[in-house]
Length: 332
Image (cartoon, rainbow, N blue to C red; front, side, top):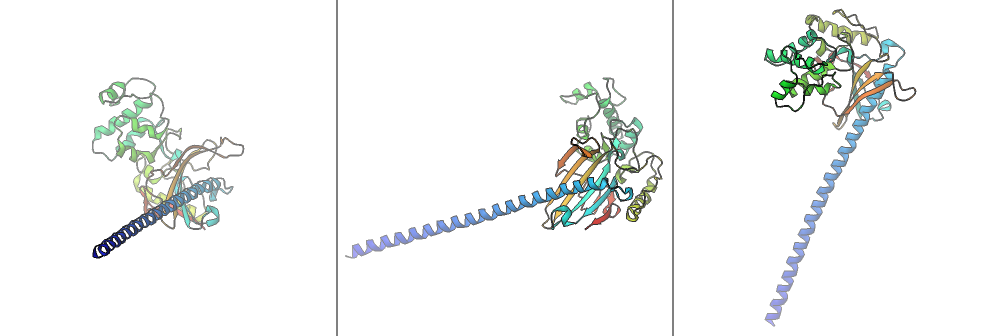
């Protein structure tokens, strides 16, 4: 009798332990499922917010194109690096976002296909490297990359120099097709490319820079510009937009501001910021006229999402300029 009772108690104890193990396992499974669901919910919310930010940033590009077509020239958005802010929910299709858009005419940059040796040398003179000989070699390497022959420029680089550097390619001996192609030029590393990228273009088609479109970053590297006049000129630009008056004459000589006419290429950078901190950047290079569809005023030459640009448009500084030198309008 005692043995049977002991056996029964043992069985009951085993059953209790088994139940506890099952309950513990179910608890762990439930906790794991809840954690997984929270993670998935967070991921889905992040994807949704990023998609919304990207859509809002694209709206900024569309608004900028519309403002470039304003019949009142003094109300058209300027293509000189000015930043415009939009916080109108109806325009953006979102009531928890704001957008900043920057416009940069390609003629306000240095065309690496057209710039002569003097202009390239002036650009490289400002390069943040200590080796003077390296700057000289970069000028020659760029000239050798774009020219049509295999004759080496002084301190330049043709096929032999690329082979000696262990590279499996040689200069194209044709004009640069994109700014990205600069990364292939002998001597151009990541640091140098990131410094050059916002200053140069392949879409200008002009040997010189239109200084009335040039950003402060470009003005500071031009060899014939008096740097002491740059800040006053930037302030005059800002004042003219605020007052709705024509752009001021350049104190540096060459250059004339005009609207985006046929063949004029410009870069639009649109950055959206949502209330929750989600953000997206869209960068486009467009050209006035030549759209692929009837009535399309602009042709898209490049389109990039979430690009690495020269700093956020919501930062305190953008390149060499403070945001107060560039941010001129609020559209509510």
